[in-house]
Image 1: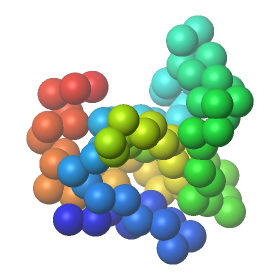
Image 2: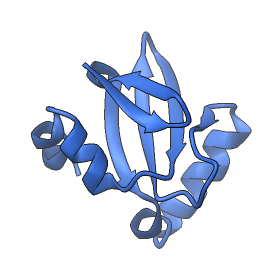
Image 3: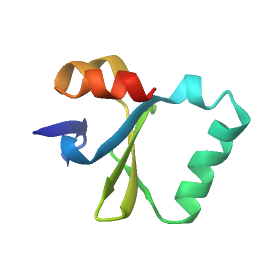
Length: 90
């Protein structure tokens, strides 16, 4: 199943490692450091023209990608069948 993240960007839900709320995760020191580091390494793909609300971490064949989305985590959870698995991770 594919999850639509906005701006015509979709990802295979089998490769999702986690879906994270932008406001909540950028409060901690590790959260604030994660996104700039991911961008520096070239992992970030912007799937948003609007204010970002979430980011989605995927890994496929050892390749990490971080998608920035204007869609809330709640909406993304509703769109996918793997929300129960992600809830356990978070």
